[in-house]
Image 1 (cartoon, rainbow, N blue to C red):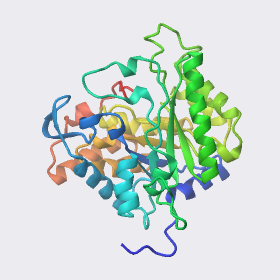
Image 2: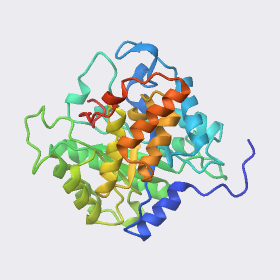
Image 3: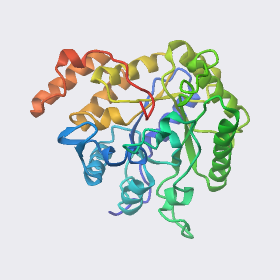
Length: 352
């Protein structure tokens, strides 16, 4: 593929600029989180036709990456989050994003609470420990030694932390984040920050101070209070913290753009209403992985998710329109329309 001398402006950069300039801006950033291979092992690509949860058979990574190519070609998301190995194939080797408005991003660390290989079940119940498989040069260039010239294929990464109210474990987690920020600033590598709910707080029998939502919000602002603008994340990726706390966090510092994560798949209405509800209370980013990957037709699902995010469709209307699109395509939905219009409780953690 021949790269143009002036690549198209990334929609992420344009939206970030408008959101920072205008507190009333209604822009919304959508990201597809195709980094499940950092957590789920063989099940990461999703079930193959006729597969059973837990046992499979599962799709291949080739299938998984083909969906990424299709979604990027449509330009319906602003960010495509991948593992370093997938980014090496698509962003570095194929230059998939060179002439695309979609921004590639790489998951830069894999804390132990997302080590979800089948059969153990032990890691998610233990306080998360920091760990990084990849490095910034590997994310940027697909190699440890950067070339002498040229533009890196990727300049954005996700760094994830999980805090549990245990001083030693939380200090180690925050130290790892500090060290990553320093290296990122030195290399001109941008990042967004993911903060999970405490993964071992309930197992340890410790009550989250002032409620778990406030626990996460307070730790976000406390952790970033010592970080100057040069090292700050471009946006957050956190569980939806409910109307009150989300509004407080969004209003606390307008330079800190709040984004929500999707969690488990659930119903179509779960996904659409999460975007609608969180945007109503101040969120301006949504990063959905399993919700997109488990959809009957990923392109149609993202197309309707985009319409809800841009306030062209209400959530329930989007569900009905999505089912109509599936009918036109001759695709049988996972559940009847009435069931898919239900709102269910879906886990917001990888291990849920």
